[in-house]
Length: 281
Image: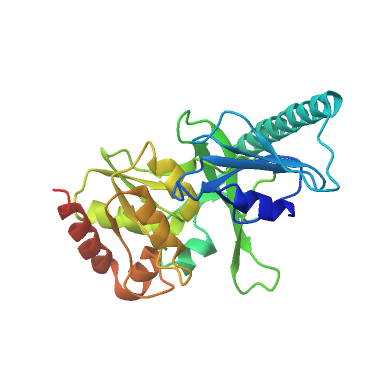
């Protein structure tokens, strides 16, 4: 029995087996919508753990397997501590770099915003011509990174990139200070949704989460509604459903709410937002 078979036989449901010697959380057969399971595999040795079953790890054992001795376990723990420190140091360095970059920006219009039919919107323009979106920790409001938006090498479209080493989980950009919170993915979508909310005199704050997966993380503590993207992969819809919040999504595949704004006008976004708000009125 190889390690993957051992994991499955133990009732764990990982999406894949990563052999990096780190602990990876995953779903279990008994709780497929939670992450009660975990496994560790370094390519030669591994164990599984299920919080709902036992308080002890189950080690993989085949004919060529030799369990870790105390010294090997100590070395592995030290390696994990060192890895956590390296990641934490990377987060802090990314934060410092982001703050410095933002301090060097000027406020102005940008070709990306014009391409999104937001000609009156302004952003933070960096010295290289890119536009920077501050990314703050949802809990502490600390700047933990930036998203940069810039023309690609062919000069025929735009690329988005996070600053290297930053912590993207629960990183957000807020638009407005209203009481009700609307969660969206992208910055341009957030601007369009907020423009519609202002048109309707709604007391809302729009929080840009930068990815559908991060919407799930943010929604655990913040949010009343989700204005989701209609991705061909259905990731936007699946994430919105997973939040448990009321949500609205464009009726055309491949569109987000900025696309609706750009192609059908702001009133189309207003109509969708009005229907969404009335669901819980």
